[in-house]
Image (cartoon, rainbow, N blue to C red; front, top):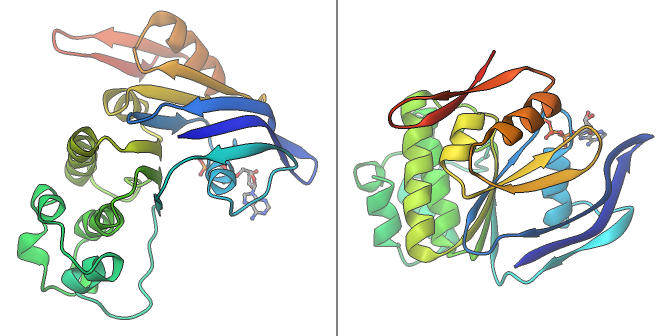
Length: 228
Ligand SMILES: Nc1ncnc2c1ncn2[C@@H]1O[C@H](COP(=O)(O)OP(=O)(O)OP(=O)(O)O)[C@@H](O)[C@H]1O
């Protein structure tokens, strides 16, 4: 679906990516994680051809790529229905029902809470029926309720529709819970690609990458990552 081959990119004399190669797992959710300023958004811009690499290439076999960022701007007042119809005239009932948008369809976007607006924007990109969906910190401004709702509904629709999803997340527990695969971008300008299975060797890797001692806490139902 998407291959990165020997990609290098610098901003000024700051090397963000140094000869990075990786294959994005098809029909799975991959979480892109890494410390602030390491180059996650830059990598997304390289994947979507908003930026050109210094060397190397991105081979994108997707038929339809949709991108959602943390801040999405409207250039004219629109209701939720109008926003959804902008992306595709035929309303996708499954998307609308899963995202619980039905009661909001005739409301102005500007009258909605931040969490409701972000769900409407998720509807906007899903209406385009992408086979590759890229999300850059989509839950950053949402409270816990909307973060969980957003990620759960995204996961449900990804499973049903077999989309390939790459999303930048800052919350490591959410990254491991809602993805099958992890891409860790490090300050050494390389990318570590791993299955999202929490194990001690991953915690050591993450502690080093985030320059924060982390530990695994096992509860009867789940394993979580916490600072030591
Ligand atoms: N348009 C730009 N022009 C010059 N430098 C930039 C630009 N955008 C980002 N940078 C720099 O590139 C580096 C990587 O930024 P980027 O936004 O890709 O990191 P990030 O991992 O997404 O960060 P965060 O987690 O804080 O969102 C940073 O040092 C940033 O200051």
